[in-house]
Length: 452
Image 1 (cartoon, rainbow, N blue to C red):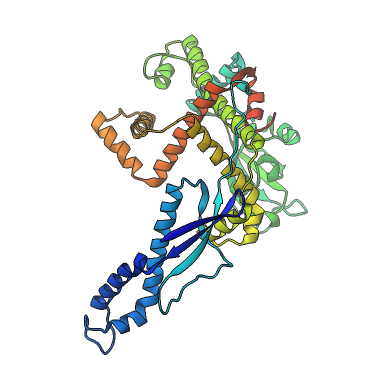
Image 2 (tube, rainbow, N blue to C red):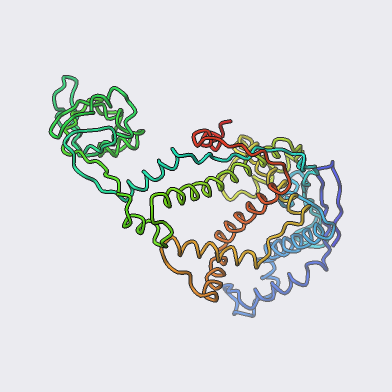
């Protein structure tokens, strides 16, 4: 076996693989001998088939299979021993003919293309400066959170007329162009939530209405998008185009959420550990919980901003022609070169970030040890038990459960991704300079959604 590397440029090379009979003949002969013992060929007893017949029927596919195994093993040995930092896998060179005689096997020569990972530098140091956004947890935010919790544990009461935050239970009946009930039209009982009605004119028309009143409405004005409107009317989304924009809505009930009282019973229900006994305690607890929740969001925004900045500023050249051919050859789905061309920028952006992340881990000796993975998975399981109000199992059982989870490849990959993100965040926070900026909740939401 002989492999020769021929460099085309800094990012592309050929690997010329020369194979001699001694590299494959013994295994091919052994495989054919096994075929001879097991094959069923009409006119011959099992195990007594002449080798010439076996070679004629199975020789070429067995030879091709064995050559493929030898080539793959040899290529990866060569790549590893020579520490070649390649992208993807070697692919056969399309316009290069295989040298060798399949009818009289002797020496063969195959040519493969490889693409090298680009060399690059990262502009990330203690001089790098990034904003670290923190939400200002003010009285308004705490009040809103407490109000939401009280509503969650409150109760619905019936009211006589509609106010700004009520739910209206009623029946939609489709009308025709003349304003009469449409024969065979849509008729469905549903609910309108006043909090989600954005049309000011419709809001004004509904406010103060009483049980039994009938209002002419366009369902679009009291719903949030087509799917919500279709559900409200009890029809399929594709049927919306054929219906009227005028409906009678008869008010059958008006329901109002009466928030739970801030009393001892409520505090015990929400905080069973006994940490909250008064409204002041609850306000303090809610403020702390909001701060922790927003801190997690702040860290996600920091990671996003640093990673996007690194991708934008880090210059990389890729072996583009090779990569496109490799994507086409390795794709498990039916794709065309046109499809690959259209999505290629997105692909290289993802690849760029992957290479940056790998470089950060390698240059800074950041590792994920197996014991860390077990402990991290144990923590995830403990949190799951806590969400269901269950105590965590004993240590041995917890370790066994964690290992069971990690046997699932998809789950293991998800956990490794989570741990990698955590380690990257720690590295960013330790490396760059953070400019802490306190912002309002509304501004924070805009920043989190990508608005600056």
